[in-house]
Length: 504
Image (cartoon, rainbow, N blue to C red; front, side, top):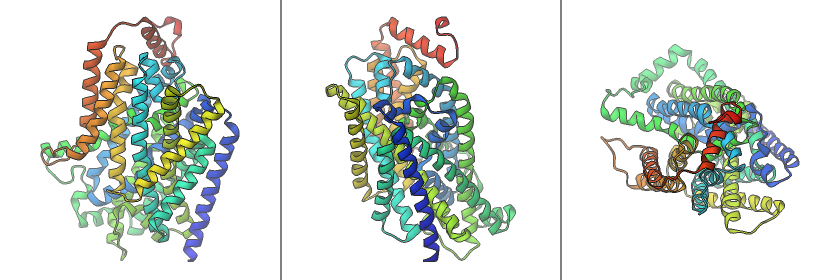
C-alpha cells in the first residue's frame, strides 16, 4: 500500500500537468485552423519532440522491449528500419510537405492536400483518404487503449477495463479542450519522460546484474542467439526475408498522418533541418534504450528470483523491483505518456479528417465555432468506438500497432512521395493506389501466405501494390496542367530556400 501511494501521487501529478497544458492550449486556440494545426507556428524543437512522442506510442515502452526480451536482437531490425525511415522522412519529406501544403491552397489535412495538389474536382480522393484515416486510426487508438488497460493491470493490480477508461478519459479531456497545440505541447513533456525512463531503467538494471560483462554472460547462458542480429540463423533466404519484413516498418513513416502533420505545422520549411537533428537524436537514444531494456531484462530475470509472465511488461517489472516507489510512479507515468501522446495526436487527425474531409465536402458552410464543436465531437466518437474494440483485444500490442501502421504506410506513403517528387501523378492514379494499398493490407493480414516460412509484413505488398497502381494509372490518365506545374515548381523552390521567381 505504501508503494502504491507514491505511485498514485506521481500519476496524479502527471495527469494534473497534462490537464494544465491542455487548458493553456485552449486559451491560445481561437479558431478551427488553430485547433487543427496550431496556426502553423510550431518551433522546430516542439515539432520534433511532438512527432517523436506521437510516433513511438506504447509499443516503445512495452511492445519493442517485449519483442527483444522474447526473441533477442533479431527484433531490433524493426528499430533499424524505423530509424532509417524517420531520417528520410525528416530529410526529404518534411521541408517539401511544409511548403507544398501551403502552396496548395493552404491545405491543413493530408486528404485536403491530396485534393488540392492534384486538382481533383471529383472530391473522391479527399473522401476516400478521409475515410481511410478514420478507419485505421480507430484501430490504432484501440491498440493504445489496450496498452493502457494492460498497464494498469500490472501497476496496480486493477482491472483492465478501469485502466483503459482512465487513459481514455484523461487523454480525451486535454485533447478535446487543447486541440493540436495541446497535443503538441503535452508531447514535449511526454517525450522527455519517455527518454529519461528508457535511459535510467536499463542502466540501473545493468548495475544490478553486475555490469556489462555479467549481463552479456547471463544473456548468453539463456540463449547465445539472443545477442545476434540474425537470431543465430544462417544467412538464408528466409532470414533475409525476415529482416526485410522487420526493417520494412520504416516504409510506414511516409504515410503516418499523425507524424507528417507535424511537418505541416512547422513555422516554415527551413525549420525541418533543426527539427530533424532534435528529432533523430531523441529517437536514436529512445530506441537504444528500449532495445537495451529488452536485452538486459533477459539477464535480470535470470539472475533474480523474480519471474516475468508477460514479456511486454519487462520495463515496468524491472522498474518496480529496482527503483523507489515515487520514481516507479514517474516511470509508469512515462509509459502512460507514450500511450497518451499517440492517442491524442491520432484523435486530432481523425477529427480533422471528419470535419475537413467529410463533413465540409458534403455539408454546407458552417461557422468556425460550429466546426470546432464538430471536431471535438468526432474526437469523442472515435474514442468511444476504439474503446469498444479494445474491450476484447486480440493479439499483442505490437501486433495491433503493426496492422494500423501498415494500413497508413501502404495507403498514404506512396501517394505522399509521388505528390512531392513526381509531377505526373494524377488524382485517379493516387486514388487507385491508395485504395489498392489499403485493401492489400486487409487481405494480406488475413490470408497472406508465408513465404519461405516467413510471414511477410503486410506493409511490403501493400506499399508495392499502391506504387504500381499509382504509376500505371497516372501514366494512362496524365494530361499536362500548367497550374499544377507552377505550384510544383513553387513548392520545390520554397522547400530549397530559393526565390520563387527563379523556380523553373
